[in-house]
Each structure stands twice: as C-alpha cells, then as structure tokens.
Image (cartoon, rainbow, N blue to C red):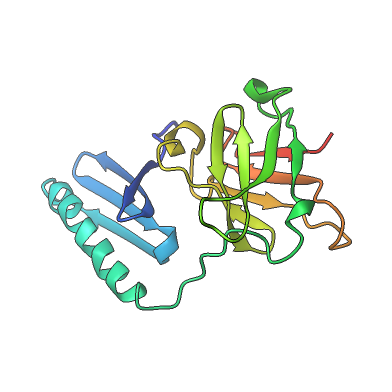
Length: 188
C-alpha cells in the first residue's frame, strides 16, 4: 500500500501539516500544527464535507493562535551553554545522494543582533536552527521545507548527548529526510 506524503504549508508563520483520504462514501482529514499543539481529525460520510472543512480549518488555526499568542514564548535560538560543541562537519552514508557531502553546523550573527545563532548547511541549502531543548533543534526554512522533509518532526535535528557535557557532540539524527524514516550524521 502506498500513500501520498503529508502536505506541508504555512499559516501565519506556523508550520502546518495535513493529510486527507477518500474511499467511496468516506472522507478523512487530519490537520496538525505542532507549535500550537493542535491536532484535528475529521471523518465524514458526506462527500461535500471535505470542501466545507477545508475552508474552516484556517479559522480554527486563527482561534488557537489568538489565545496562545497571549502566553509567554521561548524563542531561544542557541544552546543555553557552549554552542561550540555542536560546530563541525557531519557525514552520513545512509542517504545515497549525500555520500561524502558534509552537513555543516556553524555559527552566524544576524545584523544588529547581540548573540550568535547556529546554522545547518547542506551543500547550498542553509537552515537557521532554533533551539527547542534537550539537544533538539528545529530547522525551518519556508521555501525549502518541501525539498527535504517527508513527515512530522522531519524538520528537527536530534543531537546525541555526550557523556560529558563539555565534550563535542559526535552525531545527530534527522527523521523524515530519508524514506526509511531517519538518517544519522556523524563526525569523521
């Protein structure tokens, strides 16, 4: 059995995922906005419901956005301490098109900014990293999402914690970058 990938889009700055299906007489629609912690599942036996639901989902996103915007936000984009432990070149042999291609983690500084951020570079593609917590970063670049990410949380980098917190990180995993489900990048 083979199905289509998740549709990935943006709504007011939020990364959105949706997937739908149809079998004669039955519709299913799944909508996700991970940042809002919102998931909506709609199942129906009415063929016209699909169009009506599609029009109302953005209004639901707006409702959640309005309420959640009132809460304090954490927009930290670098690790709490010692970002140098992440910097370096990482390689994978699990994705055939990326053999001998360095995935580089580096620092950069935005204009008029007082601190540096981390950047993931893969050939000519650059992804600013947003620190989520516990060695996890998001790499969302709106115009590149459809080129790399195949599923939910495929836009995140999961670094393996070193035994000693002062040591360099030796590897990270990206889920969804490969059809088998994940790819591990390691320092040489």
